[in-house]
Image 1: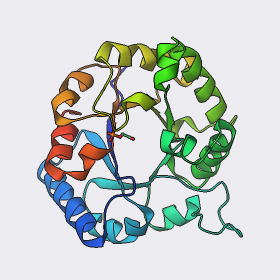
Image 2 (image 1 turned 30 degrees about the horizontal axis):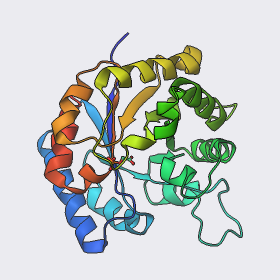
Image 3 (image 1 turned 180 degrees about the vertical axis):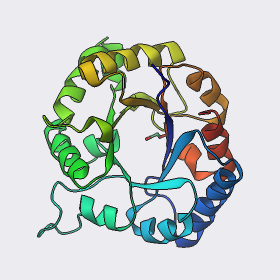
Length: 248
Ligand code: PGA
């Protein structure tokens, strides 16, 4: 089978104000422009407040836009929430869902995440569904059990394969500077494909958690890894581009 097109995603989390965010996005877009034609996809997921301005700045560049979370409905009386359709209006093509900072920081269940995935896909977004074990679960040896359960429960019954990306993000690796060994990433990625069944070979599976310019090469040397979801290292244009380049 031909190699799946790789994908690098910058998750800015709750970082970036208007001026700094625009400078960061423009610097990344310049590097991407200079490297055209790209043989991988590159997506920035800024805070929702910056999406419009950054979308304008990225017009005509190879860099795509995404959101970090959305509601299950396209409109309604939901104070403070943002709908999938609203992100589509702003030019977003991707949506991160089920990030551990949503699961554990906001009590989001896999059941809720599955509803969000369904709504975001219906709105036309490609959903990046995150799964991963905690440090305790790793120690207890229950990684594969947790991954299977989270993945099965976080996907809607009518999942659109073409709009699905899965990100393996061990919770203990996020923001800690501690990434798993590439062979352990490969083991989990293979398991994710098994759980996905017949669609497993076509769905892109990313790795996320303390990806840096220093460890990206080793991680992306693995054919199993279809790209990376990058948090803190995506807040520096040169560092993020150094990671992105390894997706070639
Ligand atoms: P990190 O975050 O790269 O800062 O560890 C990754 C993520 O949360 O997606």
